[in-house]
Image (cartoon, rainbow, N blue to C red; front, side, top):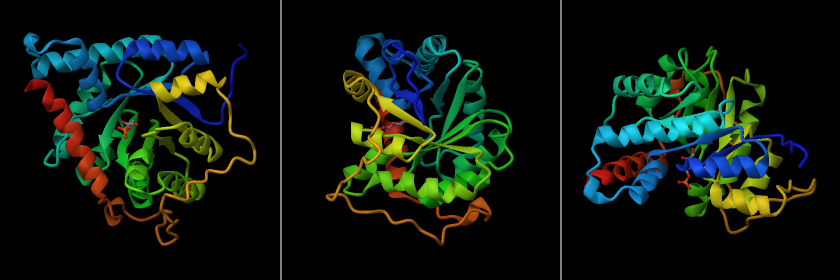
Length: 284
Ligand code: E4P
């Protein structure tokens, strides 16, 4: 198969190295991999019986083993590893975890939640390592990430979660379009990573919008493979009348201190809590 070429980098979203290998084989390459505590906990609970008593340390070791396997499969790709945080976690703790995870593999990108403490941590960490700001749901959060990481020498990803907005009746893909538009006049130090992809329409729309990166769950990846990794037609229209539009906000402009942007989004809070409880659920 001739090497396929896309306007976006193609990542796999998951917690299973065998899927990483399979996705790379199907496509012929893979630009990266995203993981999160929920996906890793799912892998661990499917493999490890409750009688083997996972501890915080052994579960973290398993996370390390999993990303090491992924890293070997895609040594030139980027592998996102997430810090564990709940609503009370301070920047100091996130920095500590990020520095530990960074050296697990040479091609790590550290995922930090898009909350105030996460951005405080990110401001420091962007001078040391590649970062991926996760649980992004608004244009305003993306503006804050941009300002907090200005001057970085490392790649910085901003990950808007489109599927979770769709789940509550809002057009998640609008957030990608809005951030693309807002970043048009930027210094381009941030890459937009479309996350929480649930179907091929998300993928086609993200390709059409030229999202820098798209992370695709294995199920959707296989569906895409069965269609020969088809690209959207020139006149492809992402038509979802059942979803409420999220309009572009011209009043949200880059160029302000990151602390001045509204960072709050209830799906960010909900996401922080569920990543935390899914991980802690391994020890019950
Ligand atoms: C990727 O970085 C995210 O963790 C992932 O895409 C979240 O997807 P979900 O909303 O389907 O859980």
